Amino acid sequence: MAAVALVRGVSGGVAVPSGDRVDVEASVRELYDVHYARLAGWTAKLVGDTDLAHDLATEAFLKLFREFGRVDEPRPWLYTVTANLVRDHWRKRGREAAAYQRHEAGRDDFTTDADHATTLTVRDAVEALPDRLRVAVLLHYFADLPVATVARQLEKSEGTIKRDLFDARQRMATMLGETR
Image (cartoon, rainbow, N blue to C red):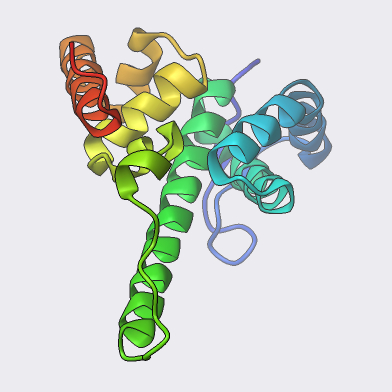
C-alpha cells in the first residue's frame, strides 16, 4: 500500500490525505473486508459481548480512516488500537464493579461472590495484569502478532516484549494456580 501524503489545515484542522479521498476510502474498505471479521471475533473473545466487540472493531476502523496516512502497518495498528479500546472498556467495567460492590456492601442481603480461585478465567487473569504486560499479551497471544511486530507497535525493544510476555505468563500461572 503506498503512503499517502498529508495536507494540514484542511477539513477543520484535521489532516486529510492528499489526492483522491475515494482512494483512501477504497484502501480502508479493502482492509475492512480482509480484517474486520477476524478483528471483531478476537475482540468478542476478549470482552465476551459480540455487539460491543463489533462496536470496538468499527471504532478502530474509523480511527484507521482518520489516521490512514500515518499508518505503516494497518493490521498490527488495528489490533493495537482495539486492544487499547478493550483496555478502556475493562477499566470502566472495573470502576463500575467497584462502585456496585461499595453500594451492595451496605445492604443486609449482600452475599459474597464464589471463591475467586474457582471462578478465575484466563480472561480474568489477563485483565488483572498491569497494562504494560496486558497489551503485549493481547497482541502476541490473542492477535497472533509476532514479537517483532508487537515491539514496533508498542515502541519497545524485542527483548523488553519477550520479558513482558515471560512476566505475564508467570503472573497468570500464579493467579490460575498452575505453578510448576
